Length: 214
Image 1: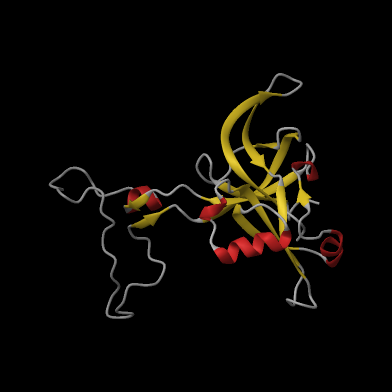
Image 2 (image 1 turned 90 degrees about the vertical axis):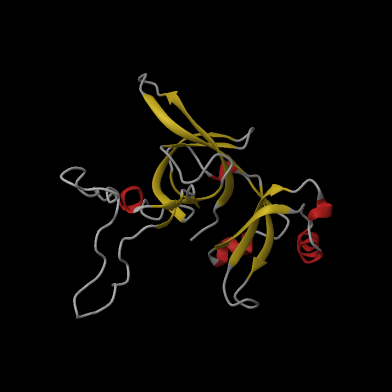
């Protein structure tokens, strides 16, 4: 899978290319990420690196187990931790305590960005699933945005799993694939990707090299 990078969505803006075309970009503060723990086949049964992002300034707010976990790697406590499965070569080349920067990416590369989508709360079927609603004339009342009948007949005598109904909308893990990197600013730890990514402003994201692009 390869090492990824953790970051924070700062928002969207637009830049101009050499032909004067407007490119909508999302600005991500990516890294520096500290390697918190290295897992190997001999010890844990697989190769992986646990990395952290967003240093916690008030260390007295970190509980004792996590304090020991960070102290062992000799890194500052971090708010956002994720684990990436890596190849044996990547595991061999990286040790706990090392730092990964945004410069692992280059302009023109494609990445997959994973984040938690914006939570919309409890939503009805029209907002959540795009239902057209009931007719709004000829005697209809108190039934304009309902979903209609949900039942089946005597067989199967139940509501089938997966039925589109009202419920909690958003706040789910979402991955947007094949986003092109427009600019990398290593001095500011800034990554600019073309298009939109999941989540609200200041939401945490994971950036990995695109699995569907060579």
